[in-house]
Length: 148
Length: 148
DNA sequence: TGTGCGCTTGACGTTTACGTCAACGTAAAG
DNA sequence: CTTTACGTTGACGTAAACGTCAAGCGCACA
Image (tube, rainbow over all chains, first blue to last red; front, side, top):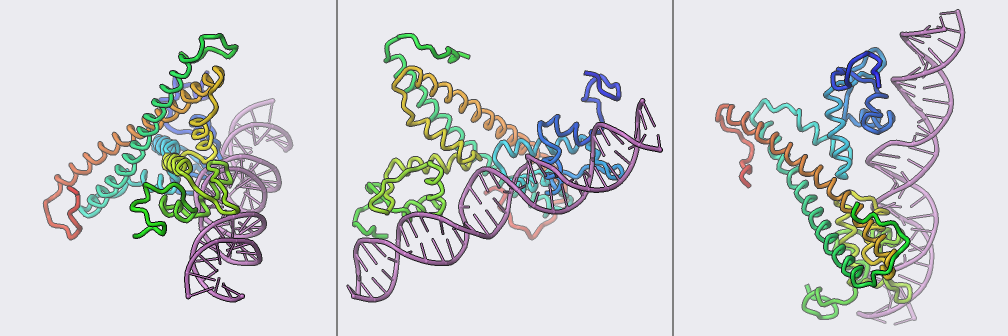
């Protein structure tokens, strides 16, 4: 597990290549480049080569979480751009705050949808388990990994 | 707002046309047909015309919630099919229960992502508000709808 | 010095989720 | 009996999010 520069852990690294970034996040280099094309990340260049810093990794984390939540990439861009938007003037700050409110409303809608889905799932599982205990306790060749 | 069959409310209706279904759910008839093509709904036919029942509306509700949560339609189909899958034999029931566990794990991951996003958003808002009070209380022409 | 490995830029292909005609059928209303 | 409004089946178009070559560049190492 030796890193090629001899550090103890990757946590000390300052910069990364596209390949390192890609398989650390479990995506392809094409995907990383696609995010760059859309302006979600903008790595430094060393000549023609891309150099990724901590900032880029943070952004990638936010991007992938946004994707897990089903947000389109364009929307994800506006969200993470919000985090380091200029907020010097009062009007800018108030704009950012209003955007925050919109984002929160969206997230809370999603949370409500998830709670509802989980509740339904629980009810459904209970009904299934009742059907199960109602049945005879006759053995079944299928594996017993319910408790796992 | 009189319905053409003269009932008081749409809640009493037993069947609906594609147009009624579509604009009740705020989607196009093309979308409804697309869901049918993918096997997410299968309305009754009266000759060539589609007739939608309560069952179809329930399914549409689940479909749209799944979409709000960012699930692909194919996955949504397997999910809602699960709800009325045959579970007569014990092995079938156990399969359904295992699927439920998978679904729940997925939903809980998403919920965790949402909680994290909301927490970050809260922290970010607090920092913004501090910057705001730090600034001079000079008036700004922008609207004052923060408390709303 | 050349050879390979990793990186780069196109450019086209693919899948998902519909949008958008086009052309036709049909049932009720005038 | 002919509109007309609604419904139906293709079939092609499109936008998003990458996948997949192809071809070339540069640098480290034998």
